Image 1: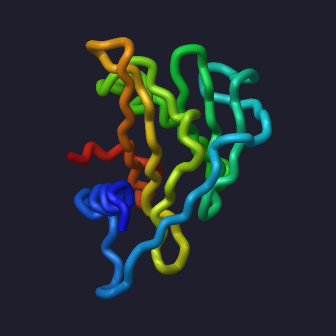
Image 2: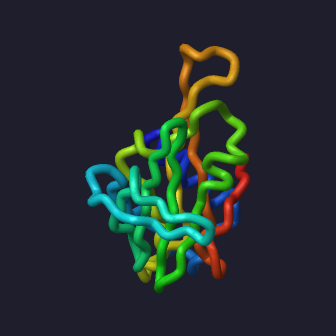
Length: 155
């Protein structure tokens, strides 16, 4: 098992996301967030027509990748409902400057044995707060078991 995979599994289990039957292990499904067709994204307060791409997700989700000059973030759509995730991916992001998800090639969906997604994991790259010549990346996890995706603050 790779270190990266082990970290992702630990995040999902540590946050109490998976409570499947004994012996039933969740699986990962990866979907691309690059080279997706351009799209228009209607948010409650504005419409984005540039820098937006619509990608296929898992379990009935679609993923919008929104690229702005100094950051990028995701929005999910399922059954006609839109869930922008930019608050924790950009506004409240504290690991560094200029957070972006569009450098990642895929997002990971943790799915139950029935194929239903219960978590979304995305990698966010950023510029170091103290040294502009250093960069880093971190994983961000959303719980998909509630009515709307919920940001998880995992150790």
